[in-house]
Image 1 (cartoon, one colour):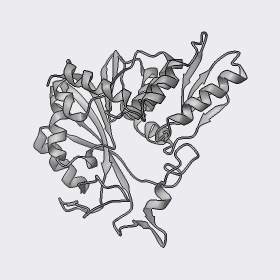
Image 2 (cartoon, rainbow, N blue to C red):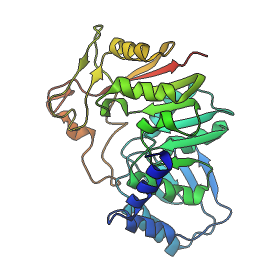
Image 3 (tube, rainbow, N blue to C red):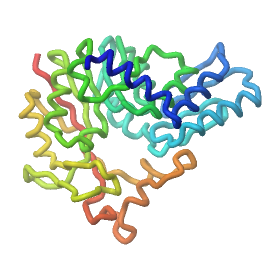
Length: 301
């Protein structure tokens, strides 16, 4: 099956009984002119002369799309307080990249929060990859007002190497530990880059100098699809095996309750529920609490 066939098949996901109401709600949103958008810590949308009834419709539509994992977003007086304060990660990484006139991809882009913010650096093209119909719907909802040129593909990391063009910069944030073959995933990203291109990636990590990784028995931090959590040296070895020229460690950061927490916009559990109530340095399963390493790697020119 080629990419176009995969796209057509996944477009059908938008007709699923839990997704179609979201699509219909987006289709009922009025068109607005003279919208003013800003892309700071909050992706902010100001709609002049917004009526009370339209404001209520917008809020009802946003709430249909819960849970909102990434953000935050502000639409006039409506504040979508996402589970993750994604500005923390973005602001940590932004000093380490320059996207001007580059072809950029965000793998596992969720609702596009990072992509919306990346627009300020004037890239040549922005492409998001995420196979989730809910996150795609959230992106459509925000982009209804922003009217960006972002391309959102309901594709996964496994499709990057077969995409119609290569990328100068790829972001892959919080995906690697969900893959049962992390080296194979890194190979796909490597093949998707132009020569001289860069990959910015973050993943769960464990402390230690040994070239080893944690393999959770069933769940990690209550998450079922976590396969391998490496030390930094093990991660470097994976990147070296794939062929990346060098590994630059940008930051190592423990996830805290300021960055990830419950809000009214998720209505599910969050980090506080995933940690041992008697020892926040451990998950409920007894593993080391979530800590992330942020790296930048290069494909030799």
